[in-house]
Image (cartoon, rainbow over all chains, first blue to last red; front, side, top):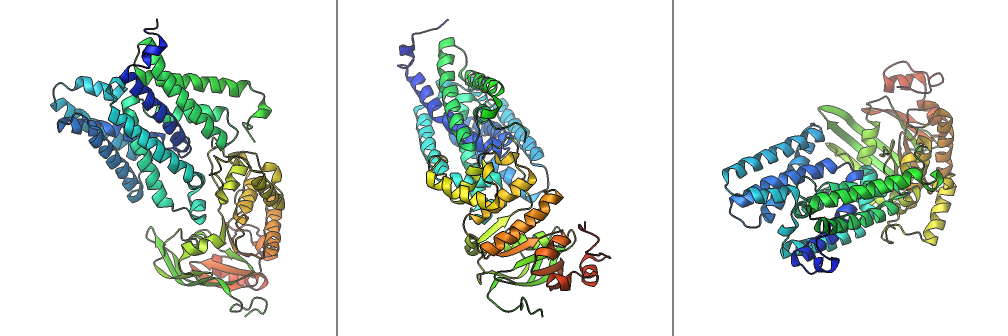
Length: 282
Length: 257
């Protein structure tokens, strides 16, 4: 069943890159995810992930070998469009996002249909492909990890206040609008860069499942953040290792590893004595 | 002019002149003038849609005005006055899955999260415990914020807003989510806190009997300030009719909706 011994796996350059990317992006997404889920932004992140398809198609159409830059730019553009429409109209944000999600996927598919011979590449963007992770991707993930990690650590009070109540945050001296935009910017860049690992369709799972699993076993936000980091790390790194061992696609294996951890956590929540956890009802 | 307050005596904590605010094609405030001297418990009453919450939001810099001037502590840059202000919103709607504990929430006011994601610290623990004990809710410290009852949550919000020793406390219908026996003790608590901390309090309220009992000055608002004065002067049938536009007797109706 297993292809190689464990040691050989770590000597293959593409596996080293994949493991490094998982090591950096797993905890980063899990940490961001705590706030994404609390702010009900998982559909938002799904929308900007799908918008990346239009960016990738645009990049391939322009003849770029690595469409990362147009991918990030189009995702940012769609994120800005969501914010703008939310501010300027009274449309429900759900409606706005569904419109932009399907719109950008449609644009992406039409551009791709005009191109020949890019089907394989598109498959790798839709479902993730660890073979496609370049050294440049790993460096970008590393930079992102340290910048965003330090940013969240330093701005945790402001971000948490913003998550709890925007007006209270304002009164406490938080600059609400700039921080909201910054959060969207950080989320968009992180999602776009995680697409290599998990694919457009599955990328949101890394933002949603680790915080949900952590919630099952947490009594407070500190515990949720720390457990989420741990679950994101073990789910993504474990997923990469398992996918190599079982010779199955990497993105889905990461997702299923995270889901397995979620059910384990849910089991613990259900079976642990009630008094040790936050009461389910007041 | 009422001798107790002497409307122009003492330094003004809040000064509002000719405030006009409109949104959605509706003029919510049409030239409001207001002056709140230090150390008073001021109530802002008026029917629904009279602009009470809008006025409060303007004071906090949450709502832009079309015309007029606002000064807090003599400062027209409201953001610079905010560190001296505490605010208790109408109600905090939190997702029940949000696991932040009361202790973590209170630590946010002092920006103590940098201490490795809310790692417990003996000094902070002591400080938060005494702050919560003052409001009588120290037992709630480790409960998730999202699972408190309306009354408990409002008390936690008061404790939160007092942590930075504000000079001005603004409360927007603080008892909206509280049952009626809880309401009375809540107003007593606010009156008590106001005296102990020598606060200036501005309270938006629907509850006329509570206002009558605890406020030292009342503003009746309906787009403009209809009348003002000590409760016994303002809260008579005639001035309430002016503000509410219908016949209201303060002794028969506890709530005016």
